[in-house]
Image 1 (cartoon, rainbow, N blue to C red):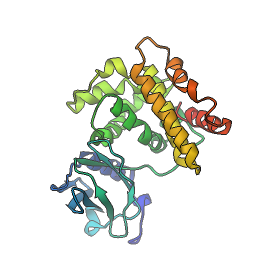
Image 2: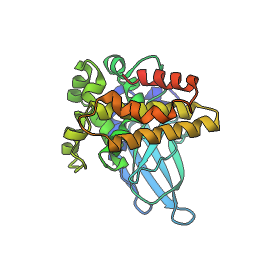
Image 3: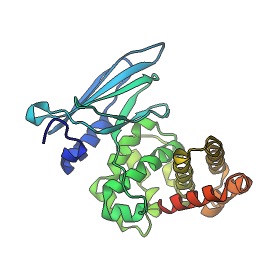
Image 4: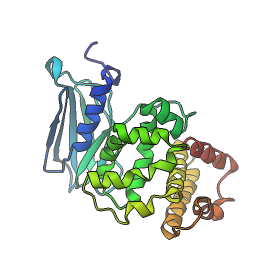
Length: 284
């Protein structure tokens, strides 16, 4: 293997260790952070930019073999305030560059590589955990947002889902969405988080169904090349969020979704609805 090796050079244990280190990372505009494991090392270095913004550089390397840098890793930052940060890919020096970051605390996540879209969450976790994580990269932020938990904890939650006990519990569920909400209380206790409201009450099947539909709408919107379609889908996503806020604990899951979509039935094309429904099926 040469200097241009990509993520395929990472073994399973190295990949898991890297995700744990990135999830533990905490850096700000004036504080760097170094995380070193048995075989992988991660270093985040910020420096000032224009105004209150700052730039940052993440270095990822193997500790053995003279700290060989890793090229081609897709790194996602998560900001404590919830603002989205574009994904950056490490270059041949193992560096990922992020520009124009807002003040706040950041953690990071190694994004799973794109896989086939023909599998839903349930078959993914039973047959290929990397494909499961690929879908959960979009689901996890909305779950934490619902609980008013800072987005910097998203990577840690994804790592938590990969622990042996939780992974096995999700695998044994008839449908992943039935067991997904139940993982949040234990994660909060593990991380000493105080969510509001309590996760035992507010991440039930009704809430999870709405969140997964939000993800389906967002994914279709990202793939759309039509600006007007994207605007319509943004409004649909907003309607789903508002319906979830105003829904009651006894409301049937389908009602929490369908009532939010009533006003948009005629505003979004049949083709877009079919794509949304298809994407939602990939989250079952």
